Length: 348
Image (cartoon, rainbow, N blue to C red; front, side, top):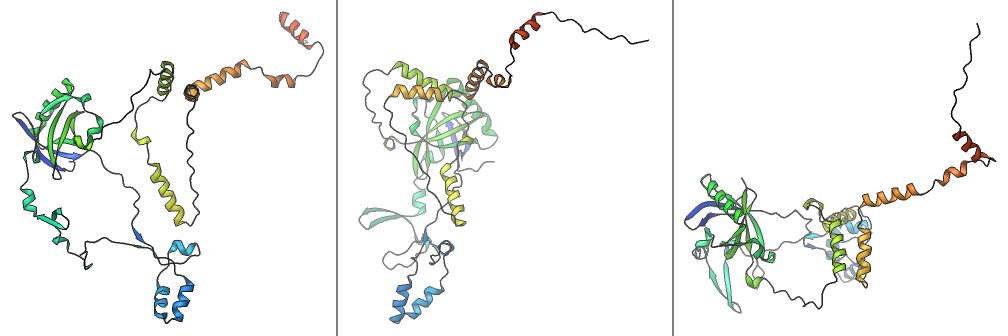
Protein backbone atom coordinates (compact mmCIF):
# COMPACT_ATOMS: atom_id res chain seq x y z
CA UNK A 1 0.00 0.00 0.00
CA UNK A 2 1.51 3.36 -1.00
CA UNK A 3 2.25 5.93 1.67
CA UNK A 4 -0.69 8.30 2.16
CA UNK A 5 0.16 12.00 2.29
CA UNK A 6 -3.49 13.12 2.53
CA UNK A 7 -6.73 11.39 3.43
CA UNK A 8 -10.24 12.58 2.80
CA UNK A 9 -13.16 12.23 0.40
CA UNK A 10 -13.80 12.73 -3.32
CA UNK A 11 -17.28 14.10 -3.99
CA UNK A 12 -19.31 14.45 -7.19
CA UNK A 13 -22.64 16.08 -6.37
CA UNK A 14 -24.24 13.69 -3.83
CA UNK A 15 -21.81 10.84 -4.57
CA UNK A 16 -18.75 10.65 -2.33
CA UNK A 17 -16.11 8.05 -1.51
CA UNK A 18 -13.08 7.89 0.81
CA UNK A 19 -9.71 8.38 -0.91
CA UNK A 20 -6.09 9.05 -0.11
CA UNK A 21 -3.32 10.73 -2.06
CA UNK A 22 0.21 9.49 -2.56
CA UNK A 23 2.96 11.53 -4.26
CA UNK A 24 3.40 10.40 -7.86
CA UNK A 25 7.01 11.59 -8.01
CA UNK A 26 10.06 11.35 -5.81
CA UNK A 27 13.42 13.05 -5.70
CA UNK A 28 16.45 11.04 -6.68
CA UNK A 29 19.13 11.01 -4.03
CA UNK A 30 21.65 13.56 -5.27
CA UNK A 31 25.23 14.07 -4.15
CA UNK A 32 24.84 16.41 -1.18
CA UNK A 33 27.41 19.10 -0.50
CA UNK A 34 27.37 20.24 3.13
CA UNK A 35 28.34 23.56 4.60
CA UNK A 36 31.81 22.98 6.04
CA UNK A 37 34.02 25.22 8.13
CA UNK A 38 37.48 25.25 6.56
CA UNK A 39 39.89 27.29 8.70
CA UNK A 40 42.70 29.02 6.85
CA UNK A 41 46.03 27.14 6.78
CA UNK A 42 48.41 28.00 9.61
CA UNK A 43 51.10 30.48 8.52
CA UNK A 44 54.50 29.52 9.96
CA UNK A 45 55.63 33.14 10.01
CA UNK A 46 52.64 34.09 12.15
CA UNK A 47 53.47 31.25 14.53
CA UNK A 48 57.04 32.53 14.91
CA UNK A 49 55.76 36.05 15.58
CA UNK A 50 53.27 34.78 18.16
CA UNK A 51 56.05 32.77 19.81
CA UNK A 52 58.20 35.87 20.10
CA UNK A 53 55.30 37.74 21.68
CA UNK A 54 54.51 35.07 24.23
CA UNK A 55 51.84 33.23 22.24
CA UNK A 56 53.45 29.79 22.63
CA UNK A 57 50.30 28.32 24.11
CA UNK A 58 48.19 29.27 21.06
CA UNK A 59 50.87 27.93 18.70
CA UNK A 60 50.85 24.60 20.49
CA UNK A 61 47.06 24.36 20.16
CA UNK A 62 47.24 25.00 16.42
CA UNK A 63 50.00 22.45 16.02
CA UNK A 64 47.87 19.78 17.73
CA UNK A 65 44.87 20.26 15.41
CA UNK A 66 44.37 17.50 12.82
CA UNK A 67 45.29 18.28 9.24
CA UNK A 68 43.03 18.01 6.23
CA UNK A 69 43.78 14.92 4.15
CA UNK A 70 43.23 16.91 1.00
CA UNK A 71 45.55 19.69 2.10
CA UNK A 72 48.35 17.44 3.37
CA UNK A 73 48.25 15.48 0.13
CA UNK A 74 49.16 18.61 -1.74
CA UNK A 75 51.84 19.63 0.72
CA UNK A 76 49.71 22.39 2.24
CA UNK A 77 48.88 21.28 5.78
CA UNK A 78 45.91 22.99 7.42
CA UNK A 79 43.19 22.34 9.98
CA UNK A 80 40.73 19.62 8.99
CA UNK A 81 37.36 20.86 7.67
CA UNK A 82 34.46 20.46 10.08
CA UNK A 83 30.77 20.26 9.26
CA UNK A 84 28.79 23.10 10.84
CA UNK A 85 25.34 22.89 12.45
CA UNK A 86 22.55 25.42 12.32
CA UNK A 87 20.56 25.81 15.55
CA UNK A 88 17.96 28.38 16.63
CA UNK A 89 19.55 30.92 18.95
CA UNK A 90 18.80 34.17 20.72
CA UNK A 91 19.95 36.94 18.35
CA UNK A 92 20.95 39.15 21.29
CA UNK A 93 22.77 36.73 23.58
CA UNK A 94 23.66 34.02 21.06
CA UNK A 95 22.38 31.31 23.43
CA UNK A 96 20.75 28.25 21.90
CA UNK A 97 16.95 28.07 22.10
CA UNK A 98 14.89 24.97 22.84
CA UNK A 99 12.97 24.00 19.69
CA UNK A 100 9.83 23.50 21.80
CA UNK A 101 9.82 27.23 22.46
CA UNK A 102 9.66 28.07 18.74
CA UNK A 103 6.10 28.90 17.57
CA UNK A 104 4.50 30.30 14.43
CA UNK A 105 4.23 34.06 14.19
CA UNK A 106 3.39 36.87 11.78
CA UNK A 107 5.43 40.08 11.68
CA UNK A 108 2.91 42.91 11.26
CA UNK A 109 5.46 45.60 12.08
CA UNK A 110 9.22 45.80 12.37
CA UNK A 111 10.05 43.52 15.29
CA UNK A 112 6.37 43.15 16.24
CA UNK A 113 4.77 39.70 15.97
CA UNK A 114 1.45 38.06 16.64
CA UNK A 115 1.87 34.38 17.52
CA UNK A 116 -0.38 31.36 17.05
CA UNK A 117 -0.76 28.03 18.79
CA UNK A 118 -1.21 24.73 16.97
CA UNK A 119 -4.83 24.57 18.15
CA UNK A 120 -5.60 28.02 16.72
CA UNK A 121 -4.19 27.05 13.35
CA UNK A 122 -6.11 23.75 13.41
CA UNK A 123 -9.35 25.66 13.91
CA UNK A 124 -8.88 27.26 10.48
CA UNK A 125 -9.72 24.00 8.65
CA UNK A 126 -12.23 24.47 5.81
CA UNK A 127 -14.21 21.85 3.79
CA UNK A 128 -11.40 21.40 1.26
CA UNK A 129 -9.19 20.22 4.10
CA UNK A 130 -11.06 16.91 3.98
CA UNK A 131 -13.19 16.95 0.81
CA UNK A 132 -12.17 17.32 -2.85
CA UNK A 133 -15.34 18.60 -4.45
CA UNK A 134 -15.37 18.13 -8.24
CA UNK A 135 -16.89 21.48 -9.14
CA UNK A 136 -16.33 21.71 -12.90
CA UNK A 137 -15.34 19.53 -15.87
CA UNK A 138 -13.29 20.94 -18.76
CA UNK A 139 -11.45 19.53 -21.80
CA UNK A 140 -7.90 18.51 -20.96
CA UNK A 141 -6.48 20.79 -23.64
CA UNK A 142 -7.99 23.86 -22.00
CA UNK A 143 -5.50 23.72 -19.13
CA UNK A 144 -2.13 25.29 -19.92
CA UNK A 145 0.69 22.96 -18.72
CA UNK A 146 2.39 25.88 -16.94
CA UNK A 147 -0.39 25.68 -14.32
CA UNK A 148 0.38 22.04 -13.46
CA UNK A 149 2.30 21.73 -10.21
CA UNK A 150 2.69 18.62 -8.03
CA UNK A 151 1.27 15.25 -9.20
CA UNK A 152 -0.38 12.68 -6.92
CA UNK A 153 -1.91 9.27 -7.43
CA UNK A 154 -5.50 9.12 -6.19
CA UNK A 155 -6.33 5.78 -4.56
CA UNK A 156 -9.60 4.39 -3.13
CA UNK A 157 -9.40 4.20 0.65
CA UNK A 158 -11.12 0.87 1.14
CA UNK A 159 -13.11 -1.55 -1.07
CA UNK A 160 -16.28 0.58 -0.90
CA UNK A 161 -14.65 3.38 -2.92
CA UNK A 162 -13.32 1.18 -5.74
CA UNK A 163 -16.51 1.05 -7.81
CA UNK A 164 -17.25 4.76 -7.30
CA UNK A 165 -13.85 5.80 -8.61
CA UNK A 166 -14.11 3.42 -11.57
CA UNK A 167 -17.49 4.88 -12.59
CA UNK A 168 -16.31 8.50 -12.29
CA UNK A 169 -13.05 7.77 -14.10
CA UNK A 170 -14.75 5.89 -16.95
CA UNK A 171 -17.26 8.70 -17.47
CA UNK A 172 -14.46 11.27 -17.62
CA UNK A 173 -12.44 9.16 -20.06
CA UNK A 174 -15.40 8.67 -22.43
CA UNK A 175 -16.14 12.41 -22.44
CA UNK A 176 -12.42 13.35 -22.67
CA UNK A 177 -12.83 15.66 -19.67
CA UNK A 178 -10.88 16.41 -16.52
CA UNK A 179 -12.30 17.61 -13.22
CA UNK A 180 -11.42 20.80 -11.36
CA UNK A 181 -11.74 20.96 -7.58
CA UNK A 182 -10.10 22.40 -4.47
CA UNK A 183 -7.75 20.92 -1.88
CA UNK A 184 -6.08 22.37 1.21
CA UNK A 185 -2.46 21.30 1.67
CA UNK A 186 0.13 22.85 3.97
CA UNK A 187 -2.20 25.69 5.03
CA UNK A 188 -2.98 26.62 1.43
CA UNK A 189 -6.14 25.96 -0.53
CA UNK A 190 -5.24 25.14 -4.09
CA UNK A 191 -7.16 24.35 -7.23
CA UNK A 192 -6.60 20.75 -8.38
CA UNK A 193 -7.13 18.81 -11.57
CA UNK A 194 -8.28 15.18 -11.43
CA UNK A 195 -8.01 12.98 -14.53
CA UNK A 196 -8.15 9.27 -15.40
CA UNK A 197 -4.77 7.51 -15.48
CA UNK A 198 -4.91 3.98 -16.83
CA UNK A 199 -7.13 2.01 -14.47
CA UNK A 200 -6.75 4.66 -11.76
CA UNK A 201 -6.72 8.43 -11.38
CA UNK A 202 -4.17 11.18 -10.87
CA UNK A 203 -4.45 14.56 -9.21
CA UNK A 204 -2.40 17.65 -10.03
CA UNK A 205 -2.25 20.69 -7.82
CA UNK A 206 -2.61 23.81 -9.96
CA UNK A 207 -0.69 27.04 -9.59
CA UNK A 208 -2.73 30.12 -8.81
CA UNK A 209 -3.22 32.82 -11.43
CA UNK A 210 -0.83 35.19 -9.63
CA UNK A 211 1.86 32.51 -9.63
CA UNK A 212 2.00 32.27 -13.43
CA UNK A 213 3.65 35.04 -15.37
CA UNK A 214 2.19 36.27 -18.62
CA UNK A 215 4.22 35.31 -21.67
CA UNK A 216 5.74 38.30 -23.46
CA UNK A 217 6.49 36.92 -26.90
CA UNK A 218 7.11 39.37 -29.72
CA UNK A 219 4.51 39.54 -32.46
CA UNK A 220 5.93 37.80 -35.56
CA UNK A 221 6.31 39.79 -38.76
CA UNK A 222 5.59 38.19 -42.12
CA UNK A 223 4.97 34.54 -42.96
CA UNK A 224 7.28 31.65 -42.13
CA UNK A 225 9.23 30.17 -45.05
CA UNK A 226 7.31 27.01 -46.01
CA UNK A 227 10.42 25.22 -47.32
CA UNK A 228 12.27 25.83 -44.07
CA UNK A 229 9.33 24.47 -42.11
CA UNK A 230 9.31 21.35 -44.30
CA UNK A 231 13.03 20.75 -43.77
CA UNK A 232 12.70 21.30 -40.02
CA UNK A 233 9.80 18.82 -39.97
CA UNK A 234 11.93 16.26 -41.84
CA UNK A 235 14.68 16.63 -39.22
CA UNK A 236 12.12 16.10 -36.45
CA UNK A 237 10.81 13.01 -38.23
CA UNK A 238 14.29 11.49 -38.19
CA UNK A 239 14.39 12.05 -34.40
CA UNK A 240 10.85 10.88 -33.68
CA UNK A 241 10.58 7.97 -31.28
CA UNK A 242 9.10 6.74 -28.03
CA UNK A 243 9.84 8.64 -24.82
CA UNK A 244 12.07 6.66 -22.46
CA UNK A 245 12.82 8.57 -19.23
CA UNK A 246 15.63 6.11 -18.39
CA UNK A 247 17.72 7.50 -21.25
CA UNK A 248 17.95 10.94 -19.65
CA UNK A 249 20.48 10.79 -16.82
CA UNK A 250 21.72 13.62 -14.64
CA UNK A 251 25.08 14.25 -16.30
CA UNK A 252 25.94 17.02 -13.83
CA UNK A 253 25.58 14.62 -10.88
CA UNK A 254 27.73 12.07 -12.72
CA UNK A 255 30.43 14.71 -13.27
CA UNK A 256 30.19 15.71 -9.60
CA UNK A 257 30.74 12.10 -8.50
CA UNK A 258 33.77 11.86 -10.78
CA UNK A 259 35.13 15.05 -9.25
CA UNK A 260 34.67 13.66 -5.72
CA UNK A 261 36.45 10.42 -6.62
CA UNK A 262 39.32 12.33 -8.25
CA UNK A 263 39.71 14.60 -5.21
CA UNK A 264 39.73 11.62 -2.84
CA UNK A 265 42.48 9.99 -4.93
CA UNK A 266 44.49 13.19 -5.08
CA UNK A 267 44.19 13.48 -8.84
CA UNK A 268 44.29 16.73 -10.76
CA UNK A 269 40.92 17.74 -12.11
CA UNK A 270 40.81 19.24 -15.59
CA UNK A 271 37.95 21.61 -16.35
CA UNK A 272 35.60 20.43 -19.06
CA UNK A 273 35.35 22.77 -21.97
CA UNK A 274 31.83 23.65 -23.03
CA UNK A 275 31.88 25.22 -26.48
CA UNK A 276 29.03 27.57 -27.27
CA UNK A 277 27.58 27.01 -30.75
CA UNK A 278 28.11 29.83 -33.23
CA UNK A 279 25.07 31.89 -34.20
CA UNK A 280 23.29 30.76 -37.35
CA UNK A 281 23.64 33.28 -40.16
CA UNK A 282 22.15 31.34 -43.06
CA UNK A 283 19.18 29.44 -41.63
CA UNK A 284 18.34 27.58 -44.84
CA UNK A 285 21.91 26.30 -45.25
CA UNK A 286 22.01 25.21 -41.59
CA UNK A 287 18.72 23.33 -41.97
CA UNK A 288 19.92 21.52 -45.08
CA UNK A 289 23.20 20.50 -43.43
CA UNK A 290 21.26 19.30 -40.40
CA UNK A 291 18.97 17.20 -42.58
CA UNK A 292 21.97 15.51 -44.21
CA UNK A 293 23.53 14.89 -40.80
CA UNK A 294 20.32 13.39 -39.41
CA UNK A 295 20.15 10.74 -42.17
CA UNK A 296 19.75 7.39 -40.39
CA UNK A 297 22.78 5.10 -40.30
CA UNK A 298 21.01 2.36 -42.28
CA UNK A 299 20.50 4.68 -45.25
CA UNK A 300 24.09 5.84 -45.03
CA UNK A 301 25.30 2.22 -45.09
CA UNK A 302 23.06 1.44 -48.04
CA UNK A 303 24.48 4.36 -50.01
CA UNK A 304 28.00 3.25 -49.12
CA UNK A 305 27.34 -0.32 -50.30
CA UNK A 306 25.89 0.94 -53.60
CA UNK A 307 28.97 3.09 -54.13
CA UNK A 308 31.22 0.11 -53.46
CA UNK A 309 29.33 -2.06 -55.98
CA UNK A 310 29.63 0.60 -58.67
CA UNK A 311 33.36 1.13 -58.06
CA UNK A 312 35.68 -1.15 -60.13
CA UNK A 313 37.94 -3.60 -58.36
CA UNK A 314 41.31 -1.99 -58.95
CA UNK A 315 43.20 -4.46 -56.77
CA UNK A 316 42.77 -7.40 -59.22
CA UNK A 317 44.32 -5.50 -62.13
CA UNK A 318 47.50 -5.01 -60.18
CA UNK A 319 47.88 -8.78 -59.73
CA UNK A 320 47.57 -9.72 -63.45
CA UNK A 321 50.73 -10.37 -65.44
CA UNK A 322 51.10 -8.59 -68.80
CA UNK A 323 50.78 -11.65 -71.14
CA UNK A 324 50.45 -10.83 -74.85
CA UNK A 325 47.18 -11.95 -76.39
CA UNK A 326 45.86 -13.02 -73.04
CA UNK A 327 42.51 -11.23 -73.43
CA UNK A 328 41.87 -12.73 -76.97
CA UNK A 329 42.81 -16.22 -75.79
CA UNK A 330 40.35 -15.92 -72.93
CA UNK A 331 37.54 -14.84 -75.32
CA UNK A 332 38.27 -17.72 -77.74
CA UNK A 333 38.28 -20.30 -74.97
CA UNK A 334 34.99 -18.94 -73.68
CA UNK A 335 33.41 -19.18 -77.19
CA UNK A 336 34.49 -22.80 -77.87
CA UNK A 337 32.15 -25.54 -76.60
CA UNK A 338 33.48 -27.57 -73.77
CA UNK A 339 34.49 -31.14 -74.86
CA UNK A 340 35.04 -33.93 -72.40
CA UNK A 341 38.61 -35.15 -72.04
CA UNK A 342 39.27 -38.65 -73.56
CA UNK A 343 39.40 -41.34 -70.95
CA UNK A 344 42.33 -43.69 -70.84
CA UNK A 345 41.64 -47.39 -71.44
CA UNK A 346 43.12 -49.88 -69.10
CA UNK A 347 45.48 -52.40 -70.64
CA UNK A 348 44.46 -56.00 -70.50
